[in-house]
Amino acid sequence: MAQEESPRSSLAEQARTLMHVGRVGMLSTLSERHPDWPFGSVMPYGLDDEGRPTFLISALAMHTRNLQRDPRASLLVAEESAHEDPLGSARLTLLGSVAEVPDPDMAAVRRGYLKRHPQSEMWVDFGDFAFYRMDITEPYYVGGFGVMGWVTADDYRTAAPDPLADLAPSVIEHMNNHHADALVLMARHFADCAAELVTMTRLDRLGCDLQAVLKDGEQGLRVTFIRPATNANGIRKVLTEMTQQARAALDPGDKPVSP
Image (cartoon, rainbow, N blue to C red; front, side):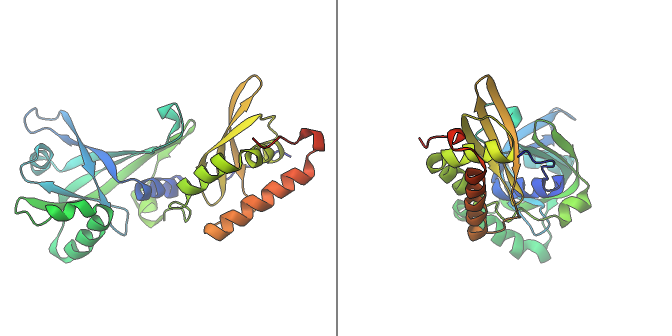
């Protein structure tokens, strides 16, 4: 039973989700030493309530000197994914201006940053360190092959991370390690794919992405859930019910053997 549509969350929500699960990006600033040349720095980041990245950086760092000359910058954040091809993984580039965090916002920014990077407690109060924040001009999101586009700053700001963002890695690992047969059933029934082996690669409240091995190659699939799942109990029930539906619909001879 192939699904006619495979809905996904908006690009803005996918972008906010990637920023939520990520911790480190690549900050590109405009070089002071070589004017207008891009200069890349590995950069841990925090997030405020609007999804703006925050940075704890030293006045001695090259990127800080660059920002003091020109606040324009970009932050690239890439998904840690099971895809063998990195171009199949999600990534986000935020364009914006970076400046020191104003005093009224300092307590919240500091608290949020240290929650994500507790090791920074060791140097957060050093005199040469300060908190900076990017005011976003426009994000560009790539969700893998064929999923990409610009996102308005307002849409990004008002979007929220997917409710399964923190659960997704453990659910994916559990399904791949313990329910490979269920994934094959779901691919065959809900995506009309003659899969012999299936791996779950991505999960959100609306559905999951699968990588299927067929007799003549591989195929990426999107399977939509029978209803949105927003918590651990909800995703467990949805996956269980979909497996049961697929098993009931398939002929006995078409059922894969659990490895």
